[in-house]
Length: 228
Image 1: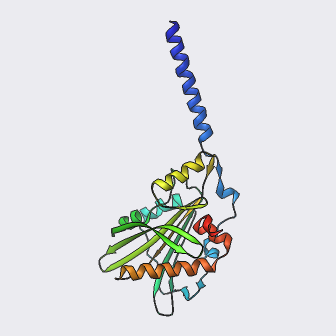
Image 2 (image 1 turned 90 degrees about the vertical axis):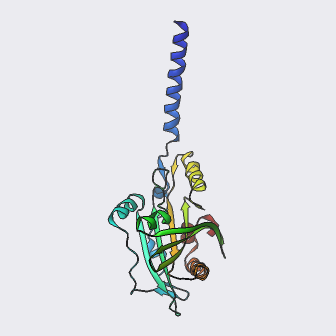
Image 3 (image 1 turned 135 degrees about the vertical axis):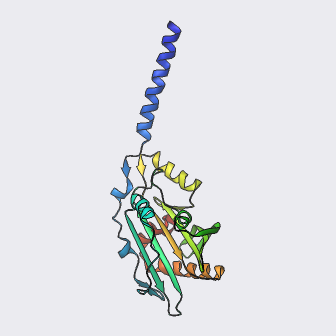
């Protein structure tokens, strides 16, 4: 009888401590509420360097089901196509989410493109060297019929750019342990080009020009702390 009481007492204490620990570790403070409000349209200039918005091009639209999923994750999205004097076009998509906890995290382009009927291949993690630091990026290729679309993208969780997957989860966990819910962004740059290597070079130049055209504070939000 005494032994069963001791076992029951220990089990009860473990349950109570587990519940208390869960409550303590559950993020309660949203970084988005403590930081300056995001306005993606104002953050990214309509013209910079040799680039300006091409109003004649309508960005790729997602299906209603995918859009509904994105609306749950992101508070703001921006989609533009830029063109330079040589007629080279680059598509820019930026999505901002005020809650990038583990339950609501960035919707990866490889998943989004697959949902749109594209074949996604050649997914490679890499680095993009800029005058402000090195960005961890993913590059992939989306193909649908005659459309060959090389893509470069990166994700920020809180104040750091991370590769999707394990590093993204670890960054989310590090915030959760402090009781904070990080915000974050997904920045995607792509172009229609049969020459993949040339497309990635063009995208890198575009990103360099874009980062040079925005202020330090905006650049930090867009790319993480290396821009500070």
